[in-house]
Image 1 (cartoon, one colour):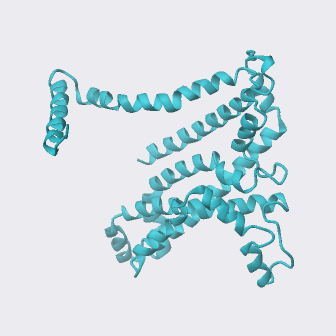
Image 2 (cartoon, one colour; image 1 turned 60 degrees about the horizontal axis):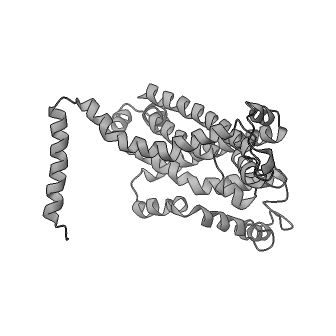
Image 3 (spheres, rainbow, N blue to C red; image 1 turned 135 degrees about the vertical axis):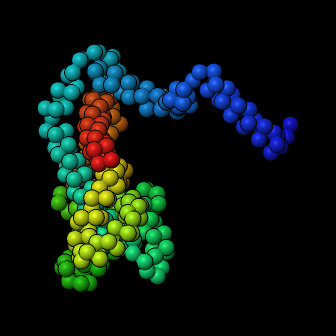
Length: 316
């Protein structure tokens, strides 16, 4: 049976009528809001809360899939104690904090600079805005392979330019020669990939600032730096905090780019906590400790998220 546009309109009208009838029969606007978000909450519970509960349950058991005869004995907090006393986990956590701090700070600086440039009127601004989003829009697997080729010690374009300019006198294995080179190379790739997101969020914040404020400041004799410090930064602070919230969460749980470029090497010098948890789960098949590692990461990320949200509410 073919459904016409008229039938669809009637169906939509009937739905709105039912909603209005529920409101007339006693539901307040607030109660109706709760009713409307219930389907979304059910979906979130299925795809997020339920797996989290299962993971938390696994973290209190010894579960080694490669040693099935051990069963699944309940060990209380033993997995957490073993992780927190493990130098490899604490080192991976320190590397994660360093990586996230450097990446987010650099993305904020570069993103703000790009946003300030794009906020000005100039020819071709629309085309540049569209182009700058390209790195963020490209699939991460392609980005990782792209940078892997560029960093290649034999035919990589970075070695070619550095040798041509006399910066280095022999080819360098950027991802495997040393820990500092590897983590620095990964940070550069991460900046190229995600700085556009920071720039677009900050650009949206800049465009919400009334132009009359800058005109009034100009009349009062304020310079460029004074206008930036007294108008732009204070009014841009909510957008900065929102951008920091999203980028901090993403940087702390970064996995794909690291896995594709270094696998945590050389040695374990670029092994973030997320990568170590992955190795525990799918390398060593230790679902007990692997689940405990993911829970610890989730707790830290939640605390970070709540702290930034509190700052955002204060600014609002």
